[in-house]
Length: 123
Image 1: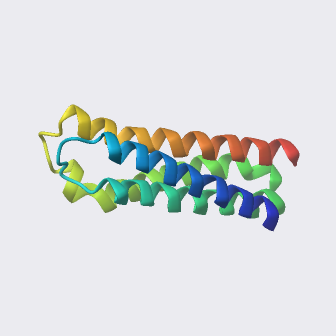
Image 2 (image 1 turned 90 degrees about the horizontal axis):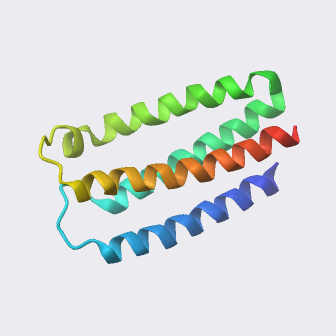
Image 3 (image 1 turned 60 degrees about the horizontal axis):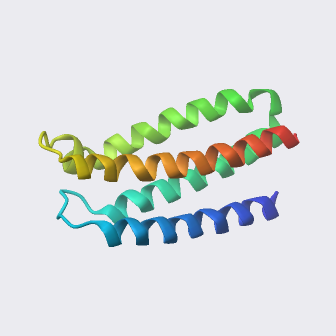
């Protein structure tokens, strides 16, 4: 369990470093929010979800799928609460800013879904 968590932590840290560096390099305009904060949120939230899934799958393996769905809703809800002033109250988000919000979400969601699927298939 600890080994899987450490491997996952290392892989999402690598994803964070590479994706943020590339994304920040190609950003040409000033955004209404800080890009590194969006990436950092997704990094931390993905790690918390995976650790929670490790705990749930070891104690209640039949309920792991449901807990993953609940954790996804909580993750998105907390994102809205944290970034509501800088993102959701701004009516004039540019296309670049919209992509800057969606790209990290899908990258970390994909990494998380693959890791959780491997975890649940091994149980």
